[in-house]
Length: 266
Image (cartoon, rainbow, N blue to C red; front, side, top):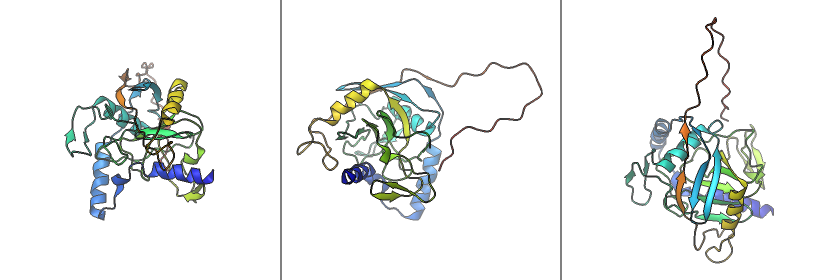
């Protein structure tokens, strides 16, 4: 069992390995600056999104209060309001929903299904990265967690996964001395950004997809590419709105502003 835990964590870590190839320090600094400029959370209040797939619909509630950057990125790519770069052609994409036609390229029963790669093989990205949003009270403690896949800290792009069960070994590490995950120790700041929760019918569909035949036999951590992968037809975002403004109170002496309740980054 421990060997399997290590294996599945390794699979997720390699989900977008090509996105983080070593680069000169100057290029890394420039990329980080560009990333911060490109990804500015709008803190949209979104209703539950619906992933229309060739296997059925999936409904997931987003968490803009817990993971504003991830929600803004997901909604922007889903609706075509966010620009991205095609990893296959290198062509800039404008006003084109990234997820339309993208497959679930990695499926593992008793674990999760993963999609969102425009290249379709787990190596692609939208042409940029953004930072993790790890929250201590938002854990992989229930089925149906919608989370960002990555290849290391702060390498989120477009790939995401949906869990079919509780998977505590993916919980974020926020301890100074690091954390034990399976048979290995991970450093502080390691983890996967949870930005939504999918409903029970979606979890049942995830289980069904995870048990489809994979290349070379049953799907496992080392063999998780479906023979006939499920495709995302379109992601529907029924409503996007800014949080409602509070009704103005009678004029009174100004009160001291309350402290921000935004979660702190590790």
